[in-house]
Length: 118
Image 1 (tube, rainbow, N blue to C red):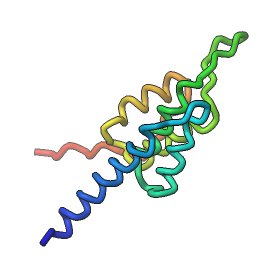
Image 2: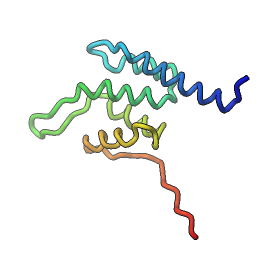
Image 3: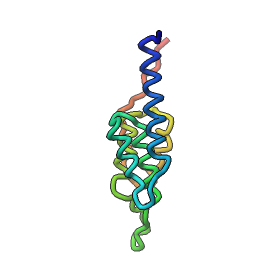
């Protein structure tokens, strides 16, 4: 018999595996379609939003006048949602760097704990 704590960890892994599986055969021309299905299956799955952002970022363009990168619609929002769900997650530093490269404000609600006084 599994303990409740073990079940919740296992469910999280299944969700991540399911998200990756749904994205493994991404269709050309629709990089976010499979990610959207993974998000519909589990809207609290941070990895699904990360993978959606990764799928969309390949369609980034450069404005010829300003030479600034222009992300495709939904890309930055997906990365921001990843940070909202997993501010200290495995890919958090990478996502923050991506958002910063687009000159977007990196908005997280995580605050480091104050060190204990001795």
